Every structure is written in C-alpha cells, then in structure tokens.
Length: 157
Ligand SMILES: [Zn+2]
Image 1 (cartoon, rainbow, N blue to C red):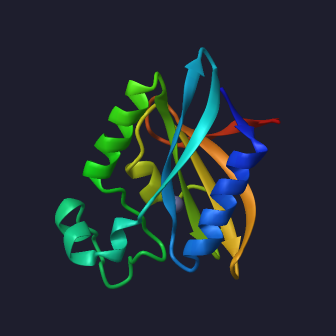
Image 2 (tube, rainbow, N blue to C red):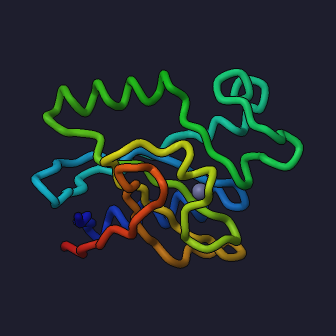
C-alpha cells in the first residue's frame, strides 16, 4: 500500500496543524484508490468537535473527559463527514483516509487511534512540536485490527 501525496497537500496539512496547535487538527483526505495505490487529490480540513465537549461527549463518550481533551483527542462531526462524502462522490472522488495532528507527541498512532480506526483507510498523522509541524506519517490498520502498519508515502509534484 502506498499513498501518493503532492507538495501542496502536504503543505495544507502542515498549515492546518500549526494553525490549530496546541489542539489536534483533523480532516478528510479525498482521492482515488487504484489497487494498492491511493492518489490523494484533496485535503478537507474540518473542525475538531472535541472543542465542544458537551456535544462531543454525547456522540462519542471519552473514558476520562478530564484528561482527554481537544489537545489529545479529535472527533469529526458525523454530519460534516456525510456532507464531505456526498460532495466527494458527486465529483467522482472517494474518501481515501483521514488526517490529524499530534501536538508535542510523535507521529505514531495511539491505542485510542487504533480502537477508533476503520479498515482500508489511510491515517495520516503529523507531529507538531511547540507549534512547528514536523514528521508526517501514514498508517493502515491490519485486517485483524491488532495494529497499524506504516504506509509508504510517495511524493508527487
Ligand atoms: Zn492520534
């Protein structure tokens, strides 16, 4: 599996992650999947619903809302997600994955990320250290959901 990423899309993710620091940013990745290759054509930044703890807690309750906040958790509004999916389909695109940032944490998926991931999608994670975007990685969930495997990122111009 590999994810093809153009420079402008990498830049869009980096800028979003810096803008939302010290909170986690999140968004949807649109493109076309062709066999083992996913071609990313659009980055859709979305608000992190964890900024609205009451609503977020209703949709997807956290075990420890005192410790888990928008700084280490993200949630995409299901209505926003539907809207983005519909709009993508109308234009012949697919949702190929999701991205989010790890403020002051490495660009590796957490257990929480794994428990809330779906099969087949690319999960792009960008680390942000003291406000500056650093590593960008991509991950795909194993079929048995036991772990994430790193996904190769191919640069395109
Ligand atoms: Zn995460």
